[in-house]
Image (cartoon, rainbow, N blue to C red):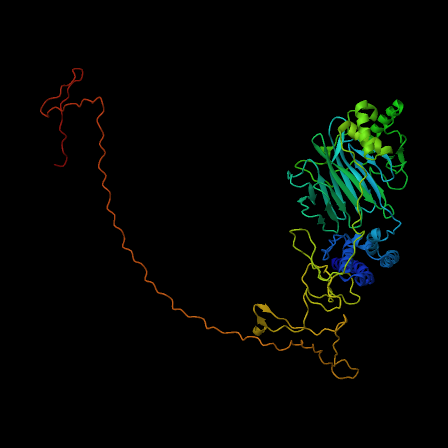
Length: 614
């Protein structure tokens, strides 16, 4: 019975492995027409984009860039001609709809998340800035005075997740002192003040390790980038196109970040303290119950910055609602946190639900500070709710006015010239660690792996002139039916020559005729592998054989040493001086002098013992 159970268990495992392998091969096979179209557009950039898209679909690291641009996969896709974009977009949408297995469907969905964005899909921006103020994706504006770590924005697919840490600057104001984000699979954190590991030389941590942006760009492993515009201002770009801009500032000796997030609401669903990006500002600050319904609605919109005393009372009540009920549903937990922590720390070490002690409005500003801040903000061009937020920041804390930032599109106005010599474009000081030149794939080869159609780095059997990066870390080895003989004359100057295989003018592999494949009953003859075509005869200098010099071993007599005789050292007795008070020495009496016996002791006669046997 046990044997039958074991047999059926093994059969089930084999069947499950076969199904999974079939699911993986389905995606790889269906992706090959897209790869051809990308390579036809640009041999080098298209091959990199195709390999990057496959890596993104499988949640794996993207290959290194071998072109001068710092583009992400989404930016490279947007740099293609619109006709090529439309063709690939329709192929991905059709494949994601027609696929039958769940694994392939999820892979196509990851690609569809950024390739489906038509020119009509415009990005929207949400912000948290100053001390701090919220500007939701739909335009709602309010103050958010809290202390803790919160979800700023997260997507339903999980591709985008941005978290913010707010620390108190005083009893009634707080600032954004740290940001953590999941950038397409890379955990990236920025710390304006406290560093989790004590390293104050850089604010960046990537997967918990300190990182330095030495140039203008830093390439993340999964296709994203970090760009630095000034000493402490950064732009983080997702491989799918979303972006975060961090502007460093300072007030009262405390550093903080103004944060702007740019997303595409047509491609995903979003949630967080920056709202849901559904086009309606009235529901951005709602509190929902566990069943998904609205527990508290945004009933006090439009009173921020009012000079009316009654509105200011309502505003303080609403500020308390935001700091307690609204903030509580977006506080992160130790399981969901993306931040780095020091010893014996967690998100609870940065949480204070009793903050702020006092809620402030513009009515609490004195007239002089209010007029001064208003003049400064109006001079900078602020209007409406942005003007009220600017007066609030500059009036209370003298924070520099923070206008809405613009994140430039790196692909606009740039012409992609053909790459003549592919050169690895990696982080300064980093050695390339993946294959960068495309390998030729045979027709129908699924995926991006090397399954018999690969070409080792440096060889070229296609008319492209470059080769694709291999998706496998294992070295590519050409299989041969005969071992290559070791010819000592094939080494010239320390470099070894290798046999050259005949190549055709196209990428079609050379077919080998099999003389034994006939329809008669003759025995099948073994297939002969064509001998490698020898290079033209080159006059090479014959190796000069130098007979080794034979040297006789030098015989040395052992050194004989006589034992050293040592005589014992005679030590003279040490002279000891007499003591200062000499002791009197008793005088010996002569033997004939009788010894006086005390009177009290009677004298006894001395008896001589008698010898026996004498």
